[in-house]
Image 1 (cartoon, one colour):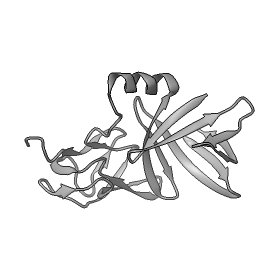
Image 2 (tube, helix red, strand yellow):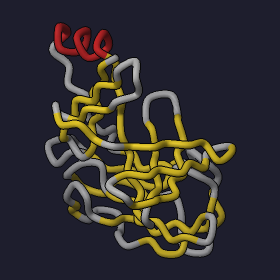
Image 3 (spheres, one colour):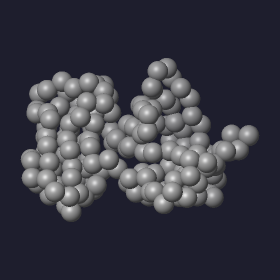
Image 4 (cartoon, one colour):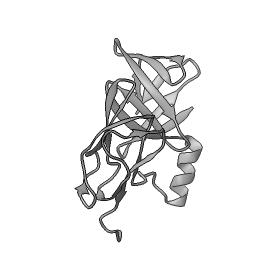
Length: 168
């Protein structure tokens, strides 16, 4: 089966065949993937072992690995083809949600601030790891819904970003 993973507006074509072989953009990758229970996984690739916390939400998958948080959208061949035929492109929503429950350590922006895609907006501590939650797009911070020291639940809205061309 073929999939398209979208991470930071870059698309990666992933193909997994019946034998478990993985191709990323046509290049073979040696990957061993094991569920350790719940959302915790062991990933071994290129002779390195990693622990990953993977949270599958309705339209996004959040992966925390090596202290970094990656949000991705994964589409199968049919979903990607349908989006292309409608002329739609998958994009970030302009909202930053908590990918898991935790404690807000720091808010690094303020309302009205101009931010670029990938800028750190909030630092969330979860499972004894600090995770930098980044802006999904360029724009202006229109609202911040949390403050340092606040506990948050999974999927709680933390920050809203408006595109610079939108009225605020």
